[in-house]
Image (cartoon, rainbow, N blue to C red; front, side, top):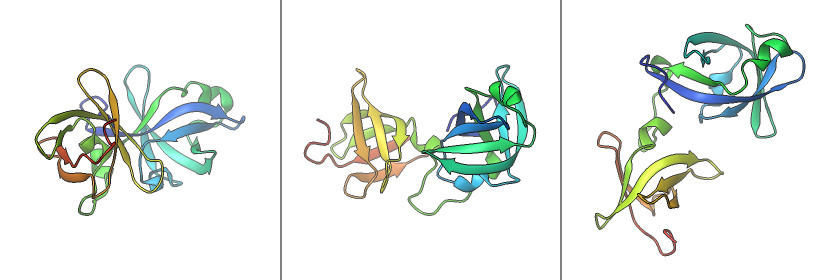
Length: 175
């Protein structure tokens, strides 16, 4: 999740295209909490001028790995066209409490990753959610990427306060 302005907001989705003629947009979801897109929920749009606009979700449904969402404020294809390429956010007070060993993306992205021997591997650049567990994309100082599965056998310590993660390097992990 990225910050929007200084208002302590967190990205939950990116509008990638329109869908149909009634103002629906296709959204790439960047949150594990699908309920953020429930009917009646408020999300915030950061427009091209960096202004923040509250939007109310009229309807949402899943479609081909994306969400199709319609906002009360945008009811036609022409209106929805201007939303392409923009991002949706929530305010900090909309964040849910997490359980132990659960983290928000914004807490993990940017953390330095070290081996259990203390060797710096790189920094977490992004997070993939392919299925059973998340996979952290770690980039080293020369731009090489490593895929680190978020599983107990690999991730030994997560210290979000100090932006540091310690991993056990299993055979083949960094190849």
